[in-house]
Every structure is written in C-alpha cells, then in structure tokens.
Length: 161
Figure (cartoon, helix red, strand yellow):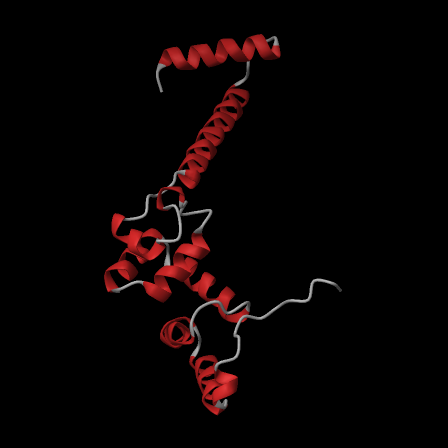
C-alpha cells in the first residue's frame, strides 16, 4: 500500500471520527476495507458466467444455447451431459463443475423425481452411490416385470397437504 493511500485513509477517518485515529482504529478500518474488497472479488467470481464449450450445442438443441448459464441452469446442464454426452463432454463437465456438485445433482435426481434414464442411473450410480445402495436399486429393477419396468419413473409429489 502506498503512503499516500494511508494518509488519505487517515484523513478520511479524521473527518468521520472527528479526531486523529488510533492505530487500532486504522487497522480496523483497513481490515473492513480488505474484507469488503475480498467479498466483492468473491461475488464477481461467483457470478461470472463460464461459457459452455461449443461442442455442447449438440446436447442442447431444444434450448437457446447462448442463454444457458452455468450457475442458473446447473442441474439441467449436468443431467443432460450425464444422460446424452460422450466421453469428451463428460471430461469437460468435470472441468466446469466439481465432482461433489455433479454428485449432488445426481443424488438429488436419484432420490427425487428420477428424470435421468435408467441406463444413466446404472452407469453413474456405480460412481455416486455407495455399493449397497447401488445393488439394492439394481436388484429391485431386476425383479420388476416388463410392465412395471416401462412405468413412469418420475415421482409426483402431492402438494395439497
């Protein structure tokens, strides 16, 4: 930090407080300034949109690709790439989102509405589910008759409680 900056801050403190500030008051003032600057950088970084790779266009034919936001549409992007993407798309997905973020979206779908296709659940369940849970699901599916296997998998939640 430059000496002029410190003098300006001290002058600002004198005008606010009315007297010459003590050393600990200057430190508190500088700490608040640093904290505010760090928070601003964090917020800018957090809301800075990461553009999806151009080869993802093929996966999002039904959407305006330019309008997809990696934070707002995180679940849609992750589910779509897990279900329809090739290995190159999967590798890029893991550079955009962390392993835990992808796992969280998968588990939310698995324990929730189950929009992901069954083959996708089998594949990614082997990675994101613990072994006991994974085989419980596989065995339950194996025991179903043909009609039950083709039933709707999305769960409908009753909202009129």
